[in-house]
Length: 79
Figure (cartoon, rainbow, N blue to C red):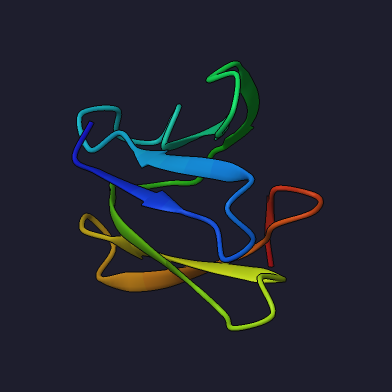
């Protein structure tokens, strides 16, 4: 992984997988059990992640495309 961040509510860990271009970009884990509970995929490479204060959105920097991906944290979909 390139980076790991904890969601604002402390329930999930978000792991950016820089080495997977265009696939398996971000794994989401339960912070208590460490079981993988989700996956976010998009074109490019995930580098770092930050969250909105309310935790509804994750902002993932995309190295390959030079953009910021905005992710709905409940649906785990890029907006």
